[in-house]
Image (cartoon, rainbow, N blue to C red):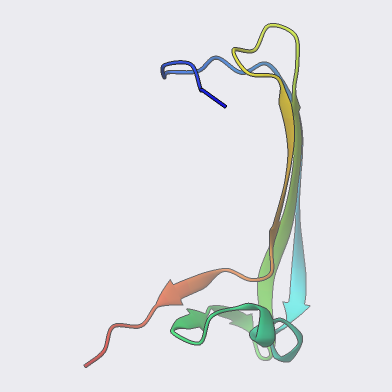
Length: 77
């Protein structure tokens, strides 16, 4: 599929929800070289993003993004 030239104009709606998640439950979903950022002992922040871009958009599509936890990169020392 060929995409139109950027910048794209998208019109639609989106919902973003944020959730406290148990670090031990989401650890298997995240590559080991990434450090889960803890906001509370044993808890991290995760989220779900759902959107629909329809009529009036350069591209018409929906998307679902699930973030098991916010992470940071740990450089080798």
